[in-house]
Each structure stands twice: as C-alpha cells, then as structure tokens.
Image 1 (cartoon, one colour):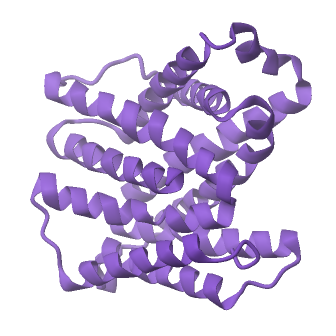
Image 2: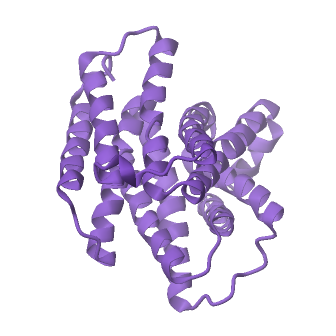
Length: 290
C-alpha cells in the first residue's frame, strides 16, 4: 500500500507538472529545485517536534553523512533532474519508457547481490511492467518515441537514479527513520540545484492557480510521494517496490484523462491491465521469488 500510494502521488504530481508546463512559462530545473527544497523543509519540520536533537544528530556520524549525501545527490536529485532533462531532449513518452528500465536493472542487481535466480513470476512481472509502461507512455506506437543521443543518456541516468535512491536509502533509513532521511535528502539535493540555477529568481506570470499546483507537487508528489514509497521499500524490499512503482504512468494517464481531458486508446487500456497484473504478481509472490 505504501509503494502504491507513493506511485499514485507521483502520478498526481505529473499531472500538476504537465498543467504548469502547458499554461505557464516554467523551466523544469526551477520546479525541481523548488519542490525538493520546500518538501525537505516540510518533512524536517514534521520530525522536529518528536526529537529536535535526533534530527541533527545524523551530522555527527561521518559514515551516515556520506550515505545521506550519496542518497541526496546520486539518488533523489539525479533521478528527478535527469528525468526532466530526458523529457526536454526527447519527449515524455520516451523518458517514461527509458526510466522504466529501472525495473529490469533492479531485478538483475538484487538477483546478483542475493545470489538467487529470478523466478518465473518475477520475470513475468518485469515483462508486464515494461510492456505496460510502453503501451501507456507511447500508446503502443514506436513513432511516438523520439530518441536522441542526449535523450537516451538522460533517460538511462533517470533509471539509474531510481535504483540509487531506492538502494541507498535502505541502510540510513533503517537507523535514522524515513521522514528525517527523506527530508535531509530533499533539502540537500534541492539546495544544490537551487544555488546552481539561482532559483530565487521567480518566474513571471505565476498566479494563484499556478502556486496551488506548485504546492500540490511539493506536498503530494514530493514530500508525501517519496517518503511513503521509501517506507514501502523498507517493508517489502526494492524489487517489489519498483515493480509496484510502475503504477505511476498508469495513474498519471488516468488522472490526465480525468482532469486534463486526455482520452484513452486501446493500447493504453491494455497497458493499464498489464500494470495491474504486475502489481498483483508483485504482492502475491513469495519473498524468495520477489
């Protein structure tokens, strides 16, 4: 449920982002920096009342600081920024399909780490996840994919980013807790990008609706989405969580149809069915298989 709700939150964030890019002159790096900084501050403020000293104690442990910095920069920031760059140099369909390759990479990495062969159920789930994502993102038509060299590189980096923030979060979250680690990770990654692009220079033309959409991205798609998804990773492991994470393109497409007037095609509906089967196989498989 945590992994599924995290994916749904990302789908909501995607629809809000699409609406912002359609109606306002926003740059993707600015939105990435703002969403990460604001969500990081919010999550840390939530954890402060419980134990103020605990929130800052992580900085006294050099080993955990290194893990936290890696999680923030090589995981969260890398994933979010490279995915938006992949969209810029190709299109959203191509970027989504390339990022979904994290499902295969994660399954292979964990199989090698655990020295176990992937079971038939897991292989089927990976296959359905990839096919379902392709059908939803590209409508089943390869012509909808515009693959440039830069788009390919950034798309693959986005897939690696998903893997790194999922795996790098596990040891530090186990010690310090999910909300605090996600909060610091968001703040560190967001501030790095914020300073690099001078994000304090606000875009012009943003009205109340635009700021409401930005707030939704910060609260739902970033602070809530990443924190509860990583809680799912903690409970069920990275392979199952990333497979269930394929609900993101399905939820984004469904919400786009509901709020932005996007219509479903037969390939997209087929993709929904494949994604649902992927989730079913993931949550019903044994721990040895997934």
